[in-house]
Image (cartoon, rainbow over all chains, first blue to last red; front, side):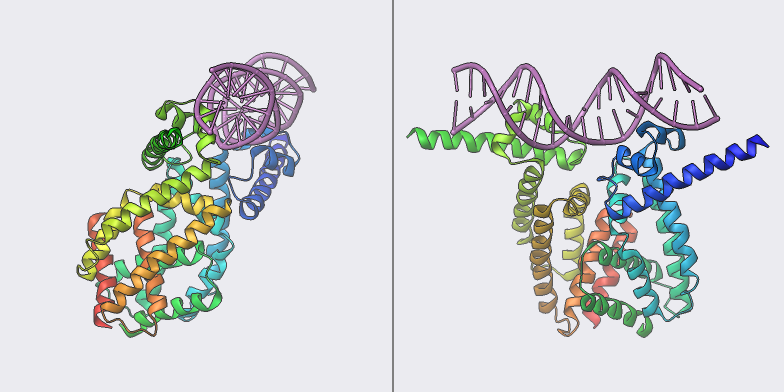
Length: 181
Length: 181
DNA sequence: ACCTGAACACCGTTCAAGT
DNA sequence: ACCTGAACACCGTTCAAGT
């Protein structure tokens, strides 16, 4: 079956490109990683990437989806923990991804596909967040606003380098308001 | 006094460059505005900019300071209004600047000077915010966390295109928690 | 189908040459 | 001191040529 074999080879090579892109985008940043750098890391010529991805934003979307898939899979294990612990876990998990978060916000302004991904990401995470709050017994009236506040605060914690104490204080303050209200 | 005259000419030309940069960075974005575009808008050759600014990030810093100065000046007029109105004013004022906000977060990762400006900006705005909350009688214990939560939520409102109703709901929720606690 | 070297249009920045 | 045309090193992307 030459077709299957070829398909496997193709998938392997694409996977290698994706692995390197994920590492480089997270470690060095999207902007600082040139297509030439990425190609060299994967051992191909610069323009070969375009056989596997439409353009650089397409590589970014593939990286974002890979990271999101892994994160959602890990989230299942913490979904039943106390509210405050969940919040801390999310922040710790995403702390290393703050370069990616900034990149999404920056690229969303210029690349419609990234803007669309950004919207979908918020739908998913806010849906999970709302479920968690509802299970914690938060009043359903203002829950939409509460969810958005929670998400915005998490994003703020991510993109600004706060020390552990400040971070914990903010998480406690947020969680307190849910468990008391 | 040829020295004064020369100085004035220089200031005028720099001011024109700054005006155009401010307009272009806000309308089209920092990344989308090339040095050649900026130069053309100001009626000079591309490399002439480097006589007035060290590099492109230096132009960005000048724009940020100009915008901040104007914003602080306008803030004085609303500083004594009710909390909720102040919050709404800040969000409306800054809504048009969301490209600039994204740019600061993106460039802060690569340009130390922008990172430094970003830190200073947060010190100033959080200081003002804290004063406002204290005057509103918010409990001083958790006020640090409360201030950061407020700032992060405002940044979130800025960088995500929420409709007016959602925006108002979030502002009301935030303000309620201050006036009740 | 897959990969490449070479080229293209662009970018921020530098430099030698002008006034 | 101030300004410029030309050049430099780089960027993402395209294309003709190879297998």
